[in-house]
Length: 199
Image 1 (spheres, rainbow, N blue to C red):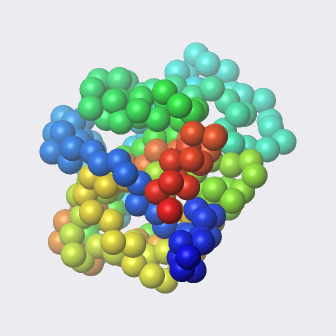
Image 2 (cartoon, helix red, strand yellow; image 1 turned 60 degrees about the vertical axis):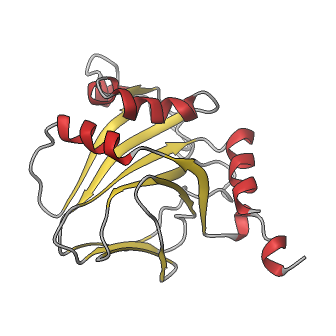
């Protein structure tokens, strides 16, 4: 076996999963949402903590650990429930594990998400969630850097990245960069899917 064949998912900082989504359907549903104008960066929740979606729900009590999302219930926003294809994307994972935060992320032209780390978004963290990224609109001038190396993501692909590592997004194009992020608990099914994709 070569060294790369001996690597596990926890050894790799990026893994393309064997899942693809219909970009035209995603774009059509995002367009139908009539998202508000924004400057620089925008994150629109499609699924979020229950009290943020339904104001009648009480704010959850303080938790000792917020890492795995178990501190609250999670609800779909009306924007997700009214977007059949986006909802089906989320349900594909909900059949197997608990999905927490789901967002549409937009980064404006000539903008940067500065380098940072997300301490609980890694498969190697014992109590955590992981984030899957689905690029929707991108361009040659858009680069997602992970550990200072570009991640060659194409629209409609689904990627796991170890976001506990340093990462940033640079948009030097003339158009928005749009992606969908889906956070979920890495149970046995999720781990197996990622491990098999790393092989």
